[in-house]
Length: 205
Image (cartoon, rainbow, N blue to C red; front, side, top):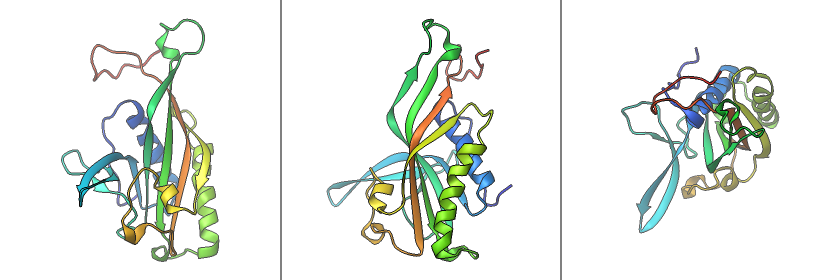
């Protein structure tokens, strides 16, 4: 078990599938200190302007943490999901829910302080980390009823990497020893069977 550990929760749908993805990253990336799940978009008025930033829950009864660029941790990752989710119905029998597929556009965002990683070699580690991330999605999701299909990777423009969020002036540039990635792609998974209420956990068979 990696210490510190990000807890998982009793979630459903896309949040539950992202927990699988966040655990796969944590289990297979030795350099990743914190693997957060799906972020929520928090809005706040600052000097009469709306500021939007990502927050992630680490406890069911505590306020979520701000996961914009910072110097608090060696490295961390979180997920941003873009509305809307899409349902695909293969075949003609739409009533057979076990074949229903959910798809979401989503992004994995990773932030790393290379200076705090004892064995980091600046000019090599960034390229190695990029490959490490993609390898997780290619080799560690077999039999998990969720796929993440990467389509784009950003690693130069910090505003592109944190697109949709407002960054403070201190962190609105990409600078050494900090490295960041944004991996855009599609999360795809089979829907669970409808149950008698929203807490049903019965699977389609």
